[in-house]
Length: 99
Image (tube, rainbow, N blue to C red; front, top):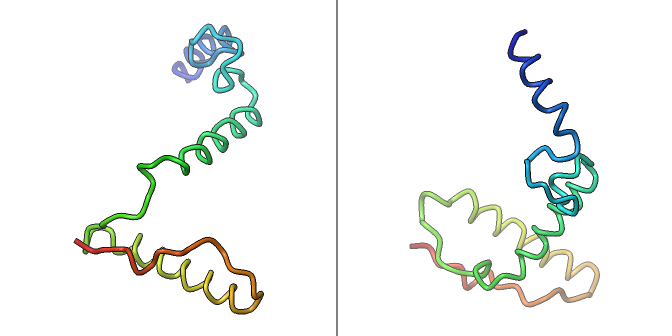
């Protein structure tokens, strides 16, 4: 119970600046959960365009679950293409290399 009050007293003063950035424009320090979520989602979408997020080799055993998920997703996309007749972007399932 004592810790709760210590935390409350500390964070009550920082209601709109929970990370102590002193930047009113920082969405993560706004205290507005929706603004924080939107900002984080936009950052995730932006990171998908990074050249570091591309097809490459994966560890044979350690990343088996990731590999299987990607294959399942690729198969789903291929079956959706056949049903709809609309071709998605070039899929690179053959280019996944296990190391």
